[in-house]
Image 1 (cartoon, helix red, strand yellow):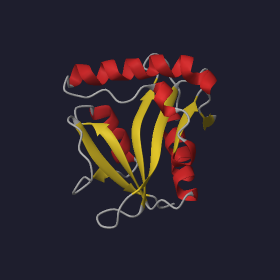
Image 2 (tube, rainbow, N blue to C red):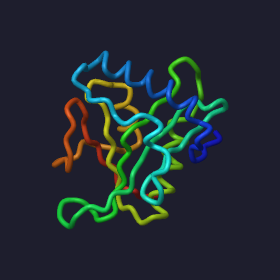
Image 3 (tube, helix red, strand yellow):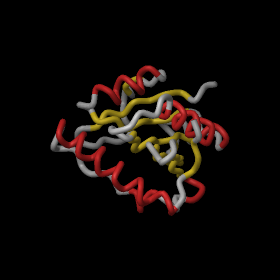
Image 4 (tube, rainbow, N blue to C red):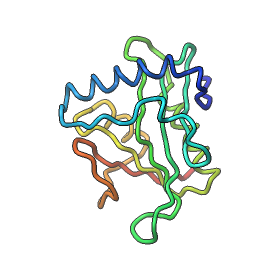
Length: 156
């Protein structure tokens, strides 16, 4: 599966994927706050990245590399704040390929773990991340209504 960093030319495809994902998750839980849309994701510089995959683009994963204060989290911790796959097409392995790219990008920058914001009432997303080894964070460092914070160590 071809996965690459998003380009400004991908925005025309990312916006509908974002809108569709927001519609699906807010139908399950209307309290969910909308996350920033696709235009806000590009240009994150050295501290963030958006990965896209499929041809035409069939999904994306948005992540940040956080500089967390000393205490509850490793100093370098990644945060996957959004992921969506086209609900009308089949791209086998795309979710795992997007995560593999994110994992490599974070590991190259010294991250020790990744936090994942997952809608609480989205059993498919919950199951996907749990099959990759994520589990509920015992004391989430952030809280958004309707989202659960999962954590996963960045081990090979």
